[in-house]
Image (tube, rainbow over all chains, first blue to last red; front, side, top):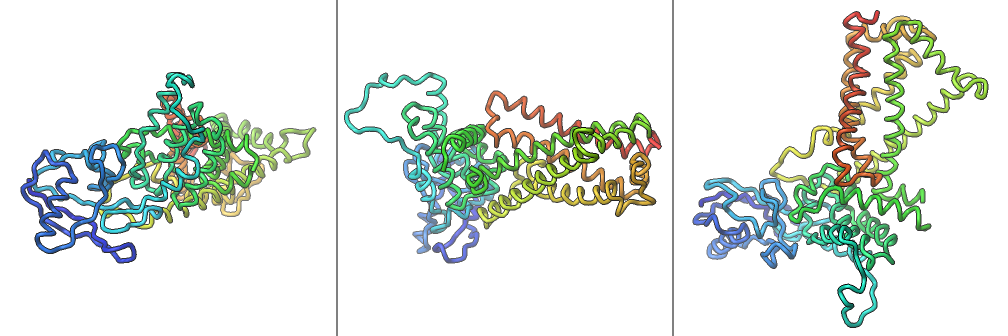
Amino acid sequence: MKLTLRVWRQPHAEAPGAMATYEVDGISPNMSFLEMLDTLNEELVLDGDEPVAFDHDCREGICGACSLVINGDAHGPEPTTTCQLHMRSFQDGQTIDVEPWRAAAFPVVKDLVVDRSAFDRIIQSGGYISAPTGTAPDAHATPVPKPDADFAFEHAECIGCGACVAACPNGSAMLFTSAKVNHLNVLPQGAPERETRVLDMVAAMDEEGFGGCTLAGECATACPKGIPLPSIAAMNKEWLRATRKVRR
Amino acid sequence: MTRTLWDSTVGKKVIMAVSGLVMLLYLVVHMIGNLKIFFGAGEFNHYAHWLRTMGEPFLHHEWALWLVRIGLVAAVVLHGVSAYHLSRRDIRARPSGYVHRKPRAAYATRTMRWGGIILALFIVWHILDLTTGTVHPGGFQSGRPYQNVIDTFSTWYGNTVYIVAVLALGLHVQHGFWSAAQTLGVGNATRDRILKTTANALALVLTAGFVAVPVAVMTGVVS
C-alpha cells in the first residue's frame, strides 16, 4: 500500500505546530497503524529527520498508552485502540490525517504525544479503595451479586486512554470519570468511600479544566472499550445521592 | 449543597435540567391554552381572563399569574446563566479543533446553544408583542387576546419569527428532555428507548400545537 500521511508536528509544548505531509510506500495491509508509523519513522531517521513522536506501550489494546485522532476519529475508524487498528481498514493511495488528542487538559508535549496526567490526578482524588493489607482474601469472602459484578466489570474495562476527551466537542472527561466511579461504587469493597469518591473525583475533573457534558454521545462512540453512554447518567445519580448525604 | 451545585459542572447541569423541565411543563400548559383559539373568540378570551382570576378569592386578582411569571423568570435566568457558564467552560476546554473535521453529534445536539439564544430573543419579542403590546402590529387591545393573536399572525414577520422560534423549540426540547433525564440520573440502558421516544413525542406535539395557531390564521381557519 502507498499512503499519503498528514501528521501534526510540534517540536515542544510552547512551539507552534503544523500538519506535515509524508509519503509512505510498501505498507502491508496486515500492519498495525503504529507499525505503519514505525515504518515512516525508520525512513525519517535514515533521511536524518526527526522521527514522529507518538505514545505506545503494550500494543495489545489493554494499556491505554496509544492515542491519535485518525481522519477525525479518536483511535481511527474501527472500534478499537490505535495499536489494534490495521492498515486493511484503509485504502491504497488514501490520504490519512493524524492528529494528537485535543483538549486544554491534555496539552501537547511533542508531535502526537499529549500529557494525560490530569487523568492520574482524577484517579488520585478517589479512584481507589482503602483496604487493610495482608494476604489476599478468599475470592468468595465478600459476595457480590452477579448483575453488580457485571456492571463493575463493564466499567473496569476503561483503560484511561482519553479517547472520550479527544472525541468530546467540549473536551469533557465525564465518561472516563463515570467509568471509574461506577466501577468502584457498585461494589461492597468501594462502599466506605462511595460518597466522597464521586464528589472528589467530579471536583478533581472540574479542577483540571475539562469541559462539561452536553450528552453529545461522541465519547461512547469513540471508546475502544465500549464504556456505554448511560454510565454518565449513573454517575450523575451517584453524585446527586452523595450531595444529599454529605454536608460539606 | 447550593454551593456544591453551583460550583460543579454536574451541579450546574442539574440546575439546567430542573429549570428546563419547569419551563417545559409551562409550555405544555401554554400550548393547550393556545389551542382554545379553535373554539372561538368567546372561549379563548374567557380562558385568558380566567388566568388573571385563578386562585381567587384566596389570592388577590392576578397574584397567581404573577407567581407563575416570577417562577418562570427564575427558571429562564437560572437556565441561561448556567448555560452561559458551562458553554464558556466547554469552549475553553477545547481551544484548538481538529484539522480533519467531521460532522459531529445530532443536529438537535449541535444547535442547543444557538437554539437557546434564538428562544431567549423570541421570548422578549413575544412578551412585547402579546403581553405588553409594545411592538404589536395595529392597535393592541388589552383583554381581547383573540384579536391580538390574529393581528400578529396577519403579518409576514409575525408568522416567520414565531414559526422559526417554535421549530427551534422543538429541536431544543428533543435533546433537552432526554439530556435532562441523563443529568438527573434517571437514564439507563433499559429506559433509554422510552426516554428518547418521550422526548421526540414532546418535541413533535409542542411544535405541532404551537405552529397550528399561525397556520390556522394564515389559512383563514381562525379569523
